[in-house]
Length: 308
Image (spheres, helix red, strand yellow):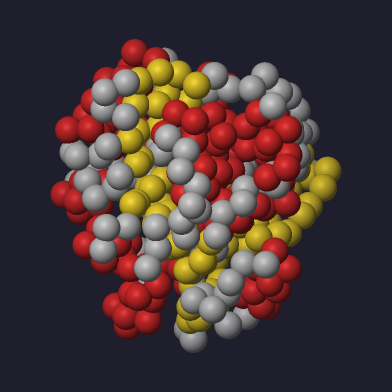
C-alpha cells in the first residue's frame, strides 16, 4: 500500500546560464543559453517523488509575485496539490542563480531563498494536521531551521517516517544535531556527510565511518550519494555500495534531488532501503542526461525501463 508523502521545504525559481566553462573569481563569461524554471531542493524532490509515482502533498512558501504565480501554475500543470502552499506578504519568492559548464555538466549555484526561510509558527499551525496524517515527511535544509525542527517534531510525535536530505551542507552544532537525530533516513552527499560528521568521504570505507556516526545519533538508514561512484547504503546492520549507472552527464544540477525524491517514493510504496536506493540511482542517472532541474526529473515509466 502506497503511503502519502508530505514534502516540507523550499521553492526557488532557477535562473540557469550554460556556458563553455565556469567563470573564475572576478571573471565574466558569455553563456550559450539561458533558461528559467521551477527549482529549490524541496520543490525538486517533491516533483521527483510525484513523477516517480508517489502521492505527494507539497508544503513550501512563496512570495506574492510573478515567480510565485509561475510556481503555482507549474504545480497545477504537474497535478500536485497546492492547497498547503504558504504565501508571504513581505518576502519575495526565492531564486537560484545557476551556472552550468556545458562540457562537464558541473555547476555553480547561489541561492537567495526569500520566502521559504520565513516560515512562522503561525504558518506551521495551519499545516500541522497535514504533516501528522502523512506516512513520510521529506525535508531538506533550505528552510529556516526553527521551522524545520518544529515540523519534524510534529512528524516524529505522530509516528511519521522522516527522510531528511541535509543539504545544503551545514556544520554540526546542537541545533543541527537535534534535527538530524529525528530522521529515520539521512541522504547526504559526500560534502554534506563530511560537514556533519567530520569524516572526509572519498570511498566506501570512509562512507562506512561517516554512516556509523549517524547511526549513533539514532538514525536508522543512511544513504550517502557519491556521484559517479554511486550510493553507499547502511541500515545499521548491513551496508553496501549501490553502483551508479554509467551515463554521460550533461547537467548534474538536479541529480541529488532526483535521487532523494525517487528514494522516498520507493520507500512509501514499501520497498526496503537498498532497493529504494537502487530506484533513486536510476532516477538520478536519467536526470543528469538532460539540462535543467525540474524539467529533467524522470517519470515512473522511464525509471522502470532503466531497472528492467
